[in-house]
Amino acid sequence: MINRNEFDALVNRVEVLSGRVRDLEGKIQALTESQGREIPSGMAPVTALAAEYGISTKKAEELARNTGVMLVKCKGGGYIAFEEKFRDSARQVLRGAKRKYGSAYWYHPLLGKFQMSGGIPK
Image: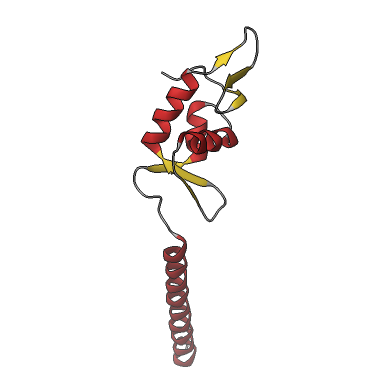
């Protein structure tokens, strides 16, 4: 059985720990708010758009630059671009790309030689 002094000491310890937990929750919330920048609507990471069309990220960035799609650099080192404009220009450029019979490489004057998995986009 616990005596009164031990019980009071345990209650005091629990109050101190709950105060520390509240402080840590506040710090975590402040950190997530400062780093939790959302991608604006209508924009998407270039890596996701590149994967959608089966081209490399570098070629997707080059495609965006050469067709006039605005790229915005993020803190992490990647880029985001306007989805619809990128998709329209990617469809147009990738449909115009040519491939020699039996070759794994495609060619377009804006991009040069590149590989594309999945074939020509619809």
